[in-house]
Each structure stands twice: as structure tokens, then as C-alpha cells.
Amino acid sequence: MGRVLRVLFFSLLLICPACQHGRMFRSRFTMNVRCPVCGIVFERGAGEFSGGMAINTVATSSVAVTGAALAFVTDMPVWPLIAVLTLVSVAFAIWFYRHARALWAGILYLTGSIRED
Image 1 (tube, one colour):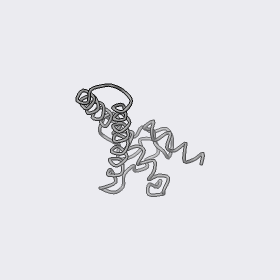
Image 2 (spheres, one colour; image 1 turned 120 degrees about the vertical axis):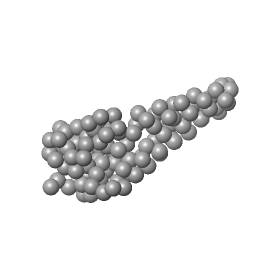
Image 3 (cartoon, rainbow, N blue to C red; image 1 turned 120 degrees about the horizontal axis):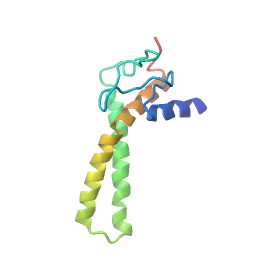
């Protein structure tokens, strides 16, 4: 259990899950193909980014649903709440993009889909 939590923690910090030193992203939206330190390939298949997209979708939906629950506990008008939730959801999805892709790479590493060469 400790290994799983360590790998997921480093993945969320955008650090290589294998060596815990290399950076997973070289720019805001560009993931390194390989770890600059240990050389592990983060995504071997062409469609492996879809797992990160799924994580991002679930996390963003959770934020939106939690925010929508405010409609039941406050007297805030509905249309301003919808506008705020839209802005927050879009901003969160853009901010969380790298973390979701890195988390997916960490999950792939844990399952053995990513192996050191």
C-alpha cells in the first residue's frame, strides 16, 4: 500500500513515478515522451492519454456537482450560480489536465503497463 500511495503522490506532483526525480512535463501542455532522468516511456500507446482525460472528466464533474449542491443550501440565484460553476469547471479542467495525465501515467506504471527498458 505504501508503494501505491508513493507512486500516486509523486505522479500528482508531476514527478516520474519510477525514479521520483524526473519531471513529467516540459511545458504546460506537453508531456515528456521519456523521463529525462531514468528514460522510462510515460505513454507507450497512441490512445493512452484517454485515461487521463477520463480522470480529468470525473474530477471536474465532481467539482461541478459539489458546487451545484450550493443551490440547495444557499439562497444564491440560479443563473449566477450556473455562470460561476461554468467558469470554475473550465478553469479546474484546464488546471488539472497535467495532474490527471500524470496520475494516469502513475497508474499505468503501477499496473506494469509502463516498464523500465
